[in-house]
Length: 177
Image (cartoon, rainbow, N blue to C red):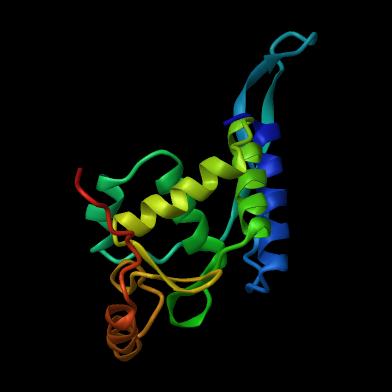
């Protein structure tokens, strides 16, 4: 990842944490030596440093998330990680609207240099629903499968699982021809 992209990512991270009212993770610079330059003065070598910005924090995945992450890829996996990092509120609930899609697209652009369309991001949402990673709770509100998220206590996870199971599966019925 180029340093300029890394800076865009860190800036986007700070903005998203602020917009979603999450506790701000520390962002700090670290100087890492890239190499050595030879000076005009004979026998004097000076180190060349690059500054890397590091984000202090973590994403809380349970071990049961691993099979789900192996099963999905591309935008589906990226969108799931985005939701888990920035959008999850208490009880594994997150909102879905055009603003969330725009934030994901902005973050994706900062990291990759490419901007996904709204349709691609929306399709990822449907794909996650089809893989039983999320369920539609009500219009614009989804619930993440609690077995994927390790950010809850054991008691809360049991209660969240009960709530998740009670949500109807929202698959459209297909007729066979």
